[in-house]
Amino acid sequence: MFKSKTTQKKVKLIINKIKKSSGWQGCVLLSSILLLSSSYAVYAQDTPVDLQKVTGELKVGLDTLWVVLASVLVIFMNAGFAMLETGFCRRKNAVNMLSKNLMVFAVSTIAFWAIGFGLMFSDGNGFIGLQGFFLKGADNSPALGDAYEGVYNALNWTGVPLSAKFLFQVAFAGTAATIVSGAVAERIKFIDFLLFAFFLVAIAYPMIGHWVWGGGWLQKAGFQDFAGSTVVHSVGGWCALTGAIILGARLGKYQEDGSIIPLPGHNLSVATLGCFILWIGWFGFNPGSTMAVNDSIANIAVVTNLAAASGGITGTVTSWILAGKPDLSLSINGILSGLVAITAGCSMVSNSSAITIGALAGILVVFAVYLLDSLKIDDPVGAVSVHLVNGIWGTLAVGLFADATITGNEKIAGLFSNGNFALLGIQLLGVVTVGMTMIILSVLFWNLLRVTLGLRVSPEEEYLGLDIGEHGMEAYNGFLEVDN
Image (cartoon, rainbow, N blue to C red):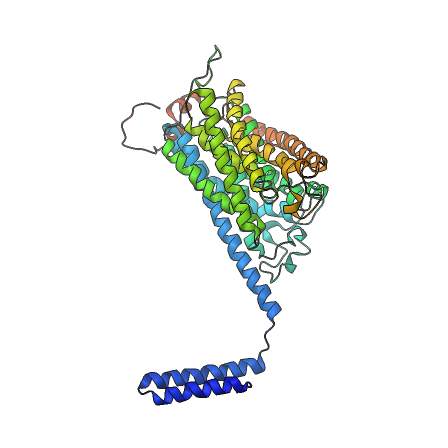
């Protein structure tokens, strides 16, 4: 049974000791040893172990577990957006903001499953995928990823099952749509926002995603966007900007004499909670984009955290200098801006570069908020300043700070790393082409909704609040009515 003489002697010694002991415990233990040894002998003789196969399956299992956990973190960011946007808006619109943030992920899930995922990742041409709709055309659970070939060749680099990849990507798609919600808050019709979200996730977002992550022309040109400063945040930001302009400002925001009337949010407590949730969720957003359990996860998490922290500090200090007192809303948006900016290059930059990128993002967001107000572009939560402005900055920052010693590729090295303008030029090309494309697509669809359904609620409905007009309920029913 046991081929090794040493093993045989050890087993005999154990058996003799058990025989000397009394009681049923000794009998049970002896029986167990004999049973296990018999099983081992049979297994060793009849079932040779393929260590390479076992190791491969274990890696796929661990990678899949990590991707699913990261997906859950990103999906939970919807709660963060809901808290943030609701807190930054007025009490009379709280139900509307909560409803939009809840339903946008439901709509995004169906749109991405039916159309978007196929357009984004399936085989096609340099501009769009042409198959793979409804997650059809590939084995849903390949052992080592080979079953992606023929339908989703762009996904060959990851061995996790197709369903895990979809879950992670639909979380990203939902985030892009949620960004739009805050910029058009407090005056857009509920149905219009949901229809726009469906259009964005089904068509516009996956098209840009195909260019960058799906084997499209920008990816082949060398454009770098590890976790979505452009694909997710800038895409959502461009839609938010065009939507805010076409809708116009909220009633009473800008006066004829040029003065600006503040319309403060009703609950900064939940807005701050939302910021914390988003901050935590970003540790799924950026490290999860590895699609594998490897030693880069911790480094990406640290870089992400440093950028967020530095963005929060500079956002606070900048608002303190300009306004005379630290503004909590700009502290929150400073943190989020640092997170957005580091998303593109989180796997390519050093800790010190991450602090620089985040710090500049915190400064940029404050000036962007003031600039939009001066242009009379009403963005109640600062979505454009956070996601568009710093999505652009983060994308360009890759061309400045990408470090070849970290990326392991001399072609992925920024200006400050190797003195070469090549990567920065490619990043700028991506920013411009994505921006122009999204402006055209979003303007067309916003205007299509405007002429068919009408984008904006009536002045009376806006004055009384969208909670009553659009939903027929209040978020804080029974509370004393003081103001709007």
